[in-house]
Length: 446
Image (tube, rainbow, N blue to C red):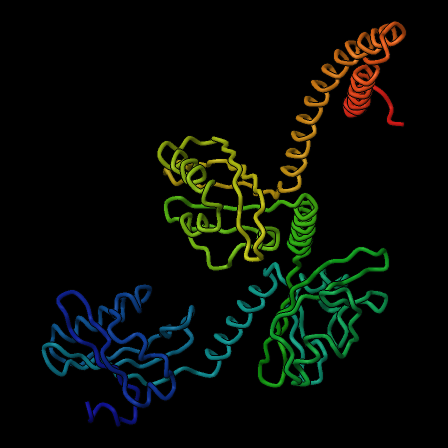
């Protein structure tokens, strides 16, 4: 290939196959003008010139006859859409398996100008039809050209109204950054790109009209020579949807935080999942828990089997829509054991994929209150029993004390000590009965 490499005319080497010609080499003159041609080495001629069959026909003729074939014709370059060159093509078979094509440009200036006009018209049509705004600025930042979408975004009657301006939006419009802060004209992405102070290639800006309405625009800036090309995409609907979603997520997070609750998701197939960050602060769980068995390490040993059994029932016979609830204690890294109430719903997809989503709530305070309530109920039951006994015993004591008064009036002096001992015991029993009745809330404490 050394002789082909240094020829003073563009030359292409093709491999001759049974049904086509494969591009194998282009000499230095071709590569200097079109470095990208090496990327299509190995491409068939039919693919490169399917819309110009005469190129392929002449190649076949040269190989068949074993002699050079020459033709002048408009040729479309491999990376263009239109035939913008008029070339003299010479097909020379150098062996049974190799064919060289030499090209000489014979196009008159008028043809090149026509091709240029055709290319420019196609470019203008493409830019005009784009749904995004496109603006070309010179090195001073003044608008050279713009399309209809740009005029519409910036409230101008036509693209011509933007030509020559450095500020696209009307003077009574406010330009905002993502935080809602007003941007000065010199801080806009396109102007910063013109001055070359490291402006970001993509920025979100807001256009606030005098009515107060704001349209959000994604600005992309690319330097082209001494100028700048900016594209403007109206993304108001997307931005508002994202902000609404963010606000909803924040409200949900605040509500979950107030309810001392978090969410979790678990994939039983891969034994992987995730939970909302607030659960770690609620239960002080270790951060290195992986999978169900890893999570079970933080569960109190007395409750661990119950949790694993609930998970096993879910995975062994998954039914879409099944709701499972289970309570267990979690041992935190702070040394405190807390009660958790888990509620989960099973989702089974059409392909059998299963997912478990649910909530985990800190019910430690509720459990404590329930225990205190049960203790109060037990005390109330004991009080009722003590009150019933005390009431009946008090009736007996009343009879005993009444009988003592009658006996003391007629008893002999030598029995007074014994009767006095009996009276003291009965009065002490009466005082104890009063305490029991007060405990049973049958009478006030004096």
